Length: 595
Ligand SMILES: Cc1ncc(C[n+]2csc(CCOP(=O)(O)OP(=O)(O)O)c2C)c(N)n1
Image (cartoon, rainbow, N blue to C red; front, side):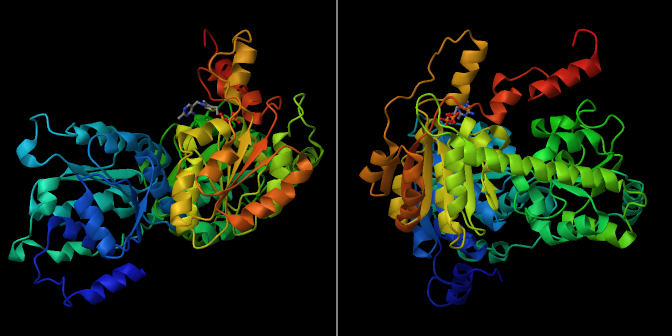
């Protein structure tokens, strides 16, 4: 039986009214299925096409978190999935309800996060006749979803829900792709129909826990041999590593490997681990001779595994279940198709400690990392205000670091401010716009983290532009009691794009200014605590008050002069072959000719 309270309550209630003998509508069965799968919360926005499910879910004690835009509902389900390691669920209405949700669905797809999206559909007798909100919903989401089901028969309801649940988990439940969103809809007339007698097969309610995939012993031996011969070993972790934290720490301890986390796995390993060297990422990528990737795509953030950025002769061990996470842009010299934790345990058992590790190199890298970390600390403390007199983003980040606790969930969203945050913000658990660069996730991620994060403190640092996309979710926070602290880094513009125009478009500024908005006043109008801060000395107390009175928003005037690492690295300029200018140059050199 699923472990959660609602599921238990649901199973206990069987046979006490609402049980198998009572007539059950399709909407009721959908809600029962949700409860049986342990779903405690669904995120969504009401609409007649889905109200039958909405109503039955609430009657069964599932919390309906009602939002202000369907895109935010998907972002919230996404954040819940990341924090709980279970699929998040969103319920959105037909037509524009679903099209509004599309950005969130695309984001979950790019981030490989399991989200089940449930929608309604025009009643079958009106299909294709110009009915209200009748569009080709399944076709709209098909390219983004791991599975799409448009259900039309009562008997298909539970089996198709089960299939969608499995599909969203990807390879972890026996499929052949990564985790991601999956979609199912029901015409409203079907939702109102009642199951006839034996038609309702409740065996589908129970989730079958996926089998953990063990690595092939011969492949383990080949991978262990590769590791034994490593001299300069690094591990780069991805999505699934959060699930394998203890095994990963043991692996790092035993092998002496250096460790680079990525945004999708931050928190898997204690940031103070002696092998963790986040400040010298570029150097480690260049100099390592053996690279282990854990459920991590070699995407733009990892230079597509390029031989111009990583060592040309470096050997890769790729560990993951889905092909995308094992064999994408650079072939592994060894590959393990397995659950990450089991693969690491098997490697340790097979004896994978390097025979002739280059200890001097490791010591040098660790020292270099420590020196850079000290320089960064000094930069945070010594950051000067801009020529406009407003705070440097590092001053804001330093003040935030003082209130963020070791059990906090930290969300970052924006352009420049995200870049500063990525290098300097203390973040035990971290959520950000991911590889889609999906601005607007900040507020909804934080709301869901406050609701589903088990009472952990939640801080969101958000650019003023990014905040605007989903600002009204502060109202959702107030209504639902989501005690998040939203900090808006207000530089009155889309600043990283503004820098791009200044540097690369002759200084012609077009559509990058956002002057005069007071997000603290907006938050206050919605019933949240709100404060505006313009001087560094006011920040610490304002942040403390925000923690006390959450949900709260602190609007901080930050300078637009500061140049972020991402802008300096060329990310905003979108180079042709690689995401960063230096990598792009290296790639061109490697390719030669007219590249
Ligand atoms: C939905 C979406 N629209 C547009 C962009 C392009 N974009 C990337 S960064 C950025 C500026 C972000 O501004 P803000 O959130 O204020 O942060 P700042 O750069 O000012 O710190 C924009 C518009 C995007 N990534 N996502």
